[in-house]
Image (tube, rainbow, N blue to C red; front, side):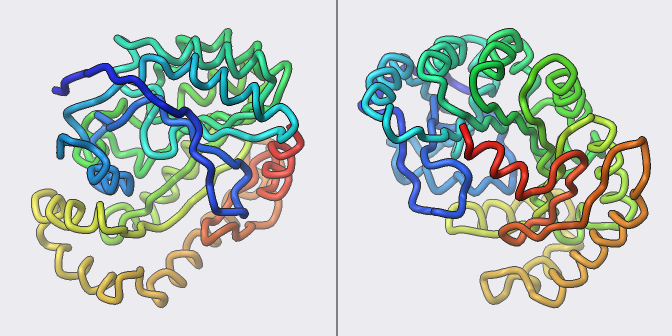
Length: 309
């Protein structure tokens, strides 16, 4: 369970320094996230909150649409691309109560700003008409993230999120009923937990059936906010792999030999999928250490598509 509190936001958009991303600003309409994923890199946000409970105290920025309207009006010449939910999920459980996203989407449509939405929630289907309308006037990318398609394991890894099956069904519905580009982000791949060949193969095939335009895969990385939390969670979920996991990250980064073997496995899974279900399969493309399965679009095409606005 979580507590939902209201807060007033002084700003809506956060300018990003990374020039390699296809978007220039993050827009976070909540502080905190009730999905409670054990690998969440956004736990570092605790340092900015008065309450050290990122998962159970959620703040809704009740004036976000008004502030966003004001800021976008000053960026007309810049033609920015926005990422909705850099350190939170815009469609987490609290959105059912707070209902901030419809107003936000209407402001975005007003300025015809291209957007990326990555969510673990099928609640986004509540706003499918707004997303369809927006996708007719600007570029819209809707993606979901999964770490596994094993429903029982997912419940341990992401206890506050809808099932992986619900997320993939959501992508299929959006693919079939809007002009939005859709994707599945299969990451993080968790060492010794979700990195088995058959596990990854099932996840890739399930993502393929969702009719997503692309699938992106990536390995687990740690920052100061998630390392301790993740390792403590592993002790509870599967204590037998704790020492192995610690060894793989003893330098602070994932062991390069392990990572190389992981991506070899990913490439072999991709080779076995060529020609299935009548979708175009191009070469596997490495993009910022993530492997991209371009079901319909290559990674470069997808990024350029979004940047065009």
